Image 1 (cartoon, rainbow, N blue to C red):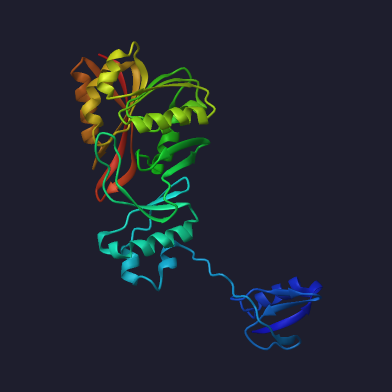
Image 2 (spheres, rainbow, N blue to C red):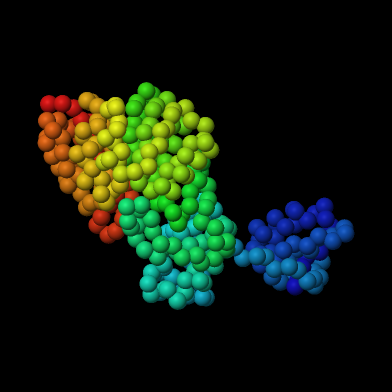
Length: 334
């Protein structure tokens, strides 16, 4: 490799000048030896001493996930590959199209190299069952599905094989937390590992009742309460909220209903448990806000209450034309 040989004290200034003139070979590392430095160049350069040296090649760092797969997959396959994946702590969960099934190991290894995380898994099913879990297949790294995810200063421990968790709701959780007032009595009807309760409880002086039917989720929520310094208090219950709530002695100022596939079937419970003037944070999958607004209004009307829609927003896209939507409603007696 052709190199410019310069005294060490002139190395940095010479490097800058050669780079500015486009004369430095950026594919190799500069070498320093005794009193001299050696800068790789593309051609002989006047006024400099040129020598031949063996230099170490620069490691090529890919700028994105797709670039790392170039030369291994065709351009069409790379385009088809969904490179938007979920990173939960030191775990990455990929969604790989069916027609790239035979390349899953290659893709998993690339994801491990690019993200530098501990474990790579791929989705094997949609979220299913009352416990809201999905099948995952281990691809690369270490087969350890337990991790700690950090969000807005909160630490959330979970096993991605045993519970459902979406890092893509981080902004929504912060938005809800910021709307909470100190002193609120809050019910999270489908709390999971507790992202809403923990994020809210770290920042607000509130009393939160957290319910989930998944025993693993409640176990991790109990751990997460210990992991975080909370201003508020969180009380956990494992079971179907329809049954569990029959023992509650209080009404709630706010009820969080983040079970978008089935939350509408529990609106009667929510409307019964909400305090007069309380807020329901309701979520569902839909292509518009009209369906959710109608469901909220009808549930209130059945028990002589009314709802004022305070806010509607799209939380995230779930499929073409369908969204995970949020509706905030203030419920009062007629």
